[in-house]
Length: 455
Image (cartoon, rainbow, N blue to C red; front, side):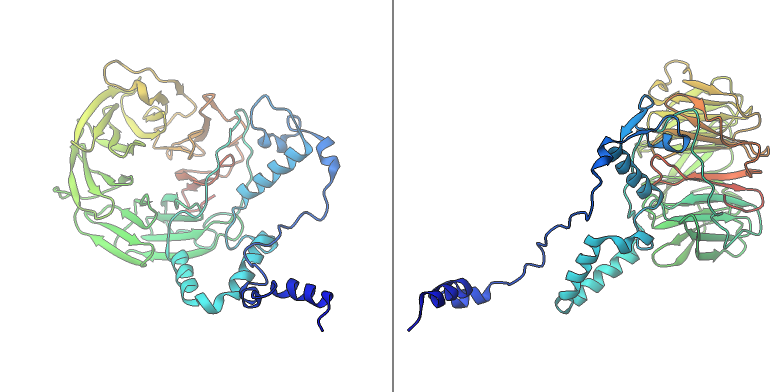
């Protein structure tokens, strides 16, 4: 005889009459719905603490606006965490990855299913390491004027210095790789972490001193040019070098400089010629012709337009769809320009006299003589480098003709940062520079100087 207690136990275990098999088919544990862990201890006093961000210099970078002076303790804690993520971006080599409990649990659950999806998992892992695309998100915070928080890290190329003058330095779009190239005919790639900065690749081009090297916009290739009629392309994923024997319809003796966008590559030749190539197939698309010698080019955010400048001191805007000049305007006070850069609403033009004019892009229409938003007179020799940081809050301007000739501009306020560089900053002759694309409110600026060191 079955008692009531046994019947109740049977219902609890097997779901009652006729439901035994259905109950056995139900999973005993749902691996995908685990209870979220709570913090072992929370300091309730954090909410009652007030932190002074204004009078402590190392905390000023945590402010969101210039008027913000104090924050609560819990807000301060969240901003410190965000700052840590900016300085140490999450990647497979970040030391803190071992402490990510959710990631560890996910790894364990994946291991339990390994026998069902080994092949698929291997394919996904291969795809991750075979791609050169961006793996990190960018942050956008307000950068305050006046002083710049500066921290010196290890030289980027400490494990592979150049044997000659380095001409190009550029971050990969994912922010974790840096290229250097120069007259020693070598292209070097470094994994940037601020401490080890390991060299991961070195490519030697026989009989090809490198004057200019840049990543393509998708980060899959590196284009290199120099004092030769040919150019070279390095495939990041295949690890192969392609030689392009000729650029355009004219046989130029050298291609010292070029600019790259998502779809185009613009190579600067002699007699004002700009040769347009496809950035993917390297097929010649046509030529543009300036009146003076072309010295610098910069693509607009809209990939269909290109800005150029040169020995005549004028700024040309080209529509690449029709290959016609949209307008030509004179850079105020310039008898010759050596550098141009465009980012967002700003256009910066550097003159042979050392003056840098910053314009509102919308005022450059060709109908009237444009007036710059600001003219910077901090440098006295020919400007040959202008670089915006990713969110166009900083403009770096430099001249390689004079020692330590580098200045940083805070664009929202149109003022120059006063605290860096200083007379003790080891810049020497700056030949190239670039901002990390993932720096956010803490942009990383890499500078090259004459003897081949990357700061």
